[in-house]
Every structure is written in C-alpha cells, then in structure tokens.
Image (tube, rainbow, N blue to C red):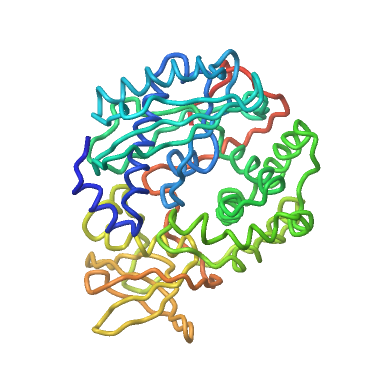
Length: 412
C-alpha cells in the first residue's frame, strides 16, 4: 500500500480532497480484484462514471461508485455477492495491504433477482480511525447492445497493479448511450457533466447514428421514450438538477464548471444525435515559423513539467479559463495547445481572455497555474489530450443484436 505522502502529493497535483484521492486509489485495487476473479471477470460488466474515469478518460471527474451489469449466471443475490466480493477483498489485502476488516461487506436486494446494492468498507493510506466505504450497484436486467471489452485500469499511483490489470467494461459508445438514457430518466448533475464532455470529443463526431441506435435499443428495453433536450428541460427533476450541481460535483473536480454553460450545449447535442451536421471543426492555433507540432508521451503529465501543466490540461478539456502567473504578472487565458520550438523549448499557446489576443508562453518560465470556474467558448481546436495514458477507442462496426454472454467480448 502507498503511504500518506503519496496521497498528499496527489491532493496537491489534482486539487482534490484527500478522502476523494484515497477512494480513487482503493477503487483501482478493488477493480483489479474483480478483474482477476475467475467468475466476476466474466459476469460483471463495468459501466457508469467510474468506468469512464478508471478505464477510458483520465482527465475526468473523480467518481465514487462501482456500477456493474450482471450477465449470465453472475452473482446478484446478497449471499452470492458477499461471498464473491469477500474473496476479492482478501486478495486485494494480500497484494496491496488495504484493510477491509473494520466492517464486513454488505449487500441487499432492491428487486429480487434483478438488482442489488452493496457496500465495501476500507481503511486506506490515511489510516483514519473509522472505515470509509465504496458503493456497489448491480443490475441484471440491463440490455448490452454492444460486446463488452477488456480495458486497462488507470492507476496513477506508485504501486502498479499486477498484470493484467484490466476489467470487463461497456464499450465506449455504449457508456455514452447509457449516460444519455440516464439523463432522460433521472436528470442528475453527473449525467449532464458526462454527456456534454463526451459530446465534445472529436472521436464521436462521425458516430451519432451508432450512439443513437444504441440509445434507442436501451430505451426500448426500458419501455421509455428516447430523451430530448425538451423532455429533459420539462422534467420535474430539472430544478433539482440545477440546484444540486455544486453539491454533487464540486468534490469530484479540480474546478466546477458553470451549470448554464454546460446546459447550453444540450440542445446542440440532441441535434447532433438526430443526425444534424452541426459541429464545425475548429482550426488549430497557427504554427509559428520556429515551431513544430508536439504530442506529449502518456507519462508526461505525471511528473515534473507535465505535473505543473496538468491543471492546464484539465482546464482546456473542461473549457475553463486559467489564471497564469508569468513574468511576475497574472494573466487570464484560454489554453489551447502545447508546441515545441526546434531548439526544444515547450510553448503553451493561448488566447488572452479579456481581449482574445493570441499569445505563446515558455513553459519553463511559467510561475503559477490556477484553474478558474469561468468558462470559455473555444475559438481554436483544443489540442490537449483528454485521455492521458489510456486511449478510449470506439468500436464503430454496428450491430443490432443484444449481447447477454461473454462469448463475444472483444479486446480494445
């Protein structure tokens, strides 16, 4: 198990509460245990916001629950779940030293044979007197439209997960479709945050028909209409969506984006989903005569210069202004890209927020970085990667069959 200093280091780097960082650490190990269990790896399919964070997009909100669709004869009854998860926790304890003994795992049925929820209790690197907990959500009557995939588990901590370090997940496009359906059903802040961030990704631009097809099948299986921007806005839960935006998301993010800025993109999202060609590709910031395009290696963001720029990457992906300390002055900027000069100097390209003048800043001369909560509308393509060390591929070949077995599982 890592030490308290490792948690404190990531609190500083990520700008999050220490309990959120510790839970993210433990979540990774519990997922590793599930992915290494011979029964659960084949019958519990990971999904939801934590799946996005841990298996697809590292620069994402820190989520707190583990959600699975149970397929075939996978454990769903409380006694089965407690027995299976207890074996997982024993193995994780042996490998990582995380203490799960303060309170036994718990599970209760919500709908007999169809859904259950559980709790896992732990004491991690902070060594707190009481146990913290992770929520498990298990559902057996969900329809998998696409084949599940094996995905690596993100674990940005010194104690690397033993190989293979992967878990069976929903495909990336199915996570998106299920988030859209959830947004129509429950109007929760995390669902709004997720669908808008996924809509912003360029790799989804050409696949609206695929996402729509999956969404339609999922809504049909539930017996509910396909959501629209209008139906969400008219929902009796919409007022709570806006009111709970900060309460439900602020602790999961370095900086909380403005609700209205996110909501304003929802009508455009559903136009895109209906097949409208509404997304204009933005041009990149012009390349200087002594510059070249540069793609940071995946490990760049973990230490040194990359660690300093990680807040800039977060802000760019979330379209938030950055307060940049440079030349003993503070500047409010819109971050767009990193470039490298032919002499090897790294440059941060940005627009000045107050008058949108284009500027470049030598990275080695940046004195401070602070992410604000003020949004901006991009004028150029944002070139900072969203996924960090873990790419998030689509599987664009279409299928209308409903997957209930693992025989068609693919590796992504």
